Amino acid sequence: MSKVTVLGSLNVDTILQIPRLPQPGETLAMTDKRNAGGGKGANQAISAARSGAKTSFIGKIGDDENGRMMLSFLKDAGINTDQVTVSGKGTGQAFILLQESGENSIIIFGGANQEIKAQDIENAKNTIESSDFIVTQFETPIEQATKAFKLAKEAGVVTVLNPAPAHKDVDSALFENVDLITPNETEAEILTEIKVVDEITAHEAAARLQELGAKNVIITLGGHGAYYKTATEEKLVKAFKVNAVDTTAAGDTFLGALVSRLKKDFSNLEEAIIYASKASSLAVQKVGAIPSIPTEKQVLAALENDKA
Ligand code: RIB
Image (cartoon, rainbow, N blue to C red):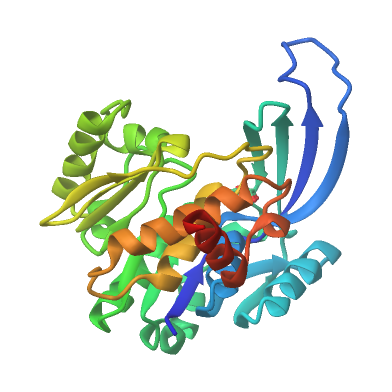
């Protein structure tokens, strides 16, 4: 069983279901509204845990109902929350405009997620060093991600960066400690200035990310699949075709499921990507982030079903 530590965000998502995005100055009626657990960090950790990884979380909540709710979601998934601490700021929130097409637009309140300090990473040193993988994103301070990845690399832990939400200038001090980077096509374009529209441009963007310092790259291409590039291999792994009702957390589900399967030497990368793609294809068929993330049993049953 893989040991995975996630350093990341915890958000309560308010999902506003709308027929389409409103025009400036327009008032539009929503068709439904609900709250669900989310945050890129929480989604990735819960995906890893539901797929069987022994998972720990490093993060911050506020001293409020939302924080207590997020903590209980992590605990219910069997995640070690010893390194989840309380900040004076409110728990992170996301406001998600979910269109009928399944596409979403997200507005974030960082709150407690932005309060992770160097001391929190120091306090989590043992947790980080005893992991197989550490995973992080850009919804918590990049400075602390850089510190955590440096510690992890010194201890032989595999580092995985999901560069979301996209940032243009990522410090080389972080890049040089990244074993695997997993942008979607938009994030890849922002990082490399190469517009990813097909396999050729995915190759170019992945090669550029390797020049910047990331050792291995997976660019997720939504319904087209996932393109991977290591030092010796590259390939587009096709997506499973499904009817998406909500793409929120599709990438997070993919990443958590991926690290739950991946061997530290990446020798089973393609097999892990197929498993992760199946997990993600199940998640997009339900509304909400945490409520939509499948278990290992569900993913394996769906893969088995495809063979029948
Ligand atoms: O990646 C999806 C997540 O992004 C949502 O759950 C929301 O909280 C935002 O952080």
